[in-house]
Picture (tube, rainbow, N blue to C red):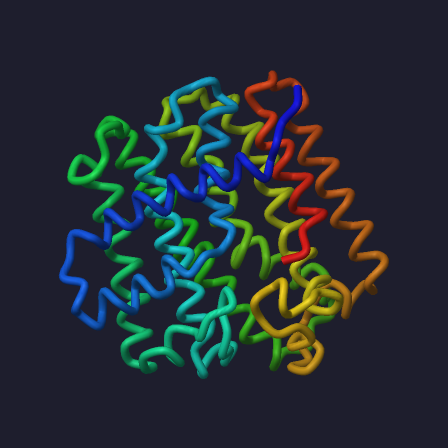
Length: 301
């Protein structure tokens, strides 16, 4: 099958962006809060998480339009996390996706509130999708999605991962690699995994099939972070839209710092191989998922 990933990603990004615009378009565009939300939400980016939701729904042979509410909610939550990560109290970054970070464009207070608003409104979209979407999951599936996404984003997922990441500056771990894997399983991995899971859940997929997809998502989620660490050393800031070398400068715990650059590359490749193996029995409907896995290992931003 001749599959053009670039074209696929572009079309799905445009679709997700169109609905995200509708989400914020319901509100007065003159409000600074809405402008700050829009600045970060619509600042480009790969839209990897919502596209994974779409691809997972397609892999199950179902109509992916039912997954769009989850797609938008997950991207809103992801963007909130980026806004807060960039704050001076956290990573203190000036650039995100090639643009000034939210607190640099507006103010710290506005950035904090924009992040808060994106997070809370995401669950409004999940619970009341009929306000925007023509196709959406039935109420019981929506309730399940809210439960899964809130767990992945909160104290058992992304927020705890961020906390562990902050503490890693202060703590000396006996087993740094185990600790680092734990950080990224929570900080990055949980939201990537729930993106895949949400896409499959939204279209009413059998749990045994979802289990295979979760293995795939766990593997690519960790590989994504390993590649991120590698790009922080080798990446081109002009392509990435943010500064390179900040991890070394800030003495951050990273895969290259612990196991070396070459071993990190091998580790990422092995994770992608395991991810592809987990969906080897899926038919051609899973071609986008396979292509995304390859993209993660070969990306330059």
